[in-house]
Image (cartoon, rainbow, N blue to C red):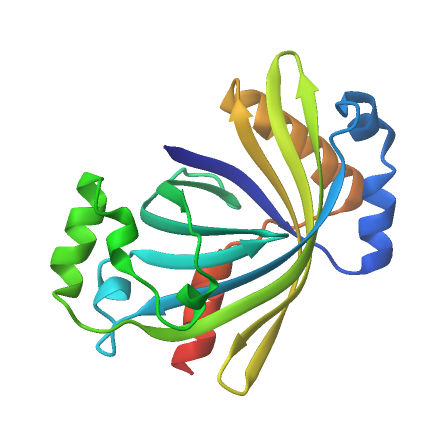
Length: 210
């Protein structure tokens, strides 16, 4: 599947609270869709960074009580700052030990998973960086376009270095990209938000390589 989402920088937690109460967004919110989830993610690669060289992200993430393995690749140039489109595969993971010893074979049933196994060639995977954050989210429905609005606050951790996470994401679930952009533009204009030009993966990679 292709993940399409907008990302914006948020200057303060107070601003997050204001946007959460925004009349435009709350008027579109689906009933009982709001949730608060603690996220912990670990990103892995080989010692020689073969996955990074191929723009592949291998992530294990704990989402509340659920553990999910995700493979992301092929970032697409959307031509719009802060708008991300990339292909991904996610599979459930039963064993929490994957945070210490991830198994690339969890993706073996897909063509992209086979490409991952070929790239890794049996090399062990090592932790590159982690993200720990709280996500406050809810779904909205605008003219049949379904999106998830998320506020993420936390940090990226690479060795002894840390960088903050404080951002708004609006992810397209179904419907039109144009409506997603309209929603994002309306919220960004109302609160003076700037697009976030780098994904968590790109920021984590840069932090790890410092």
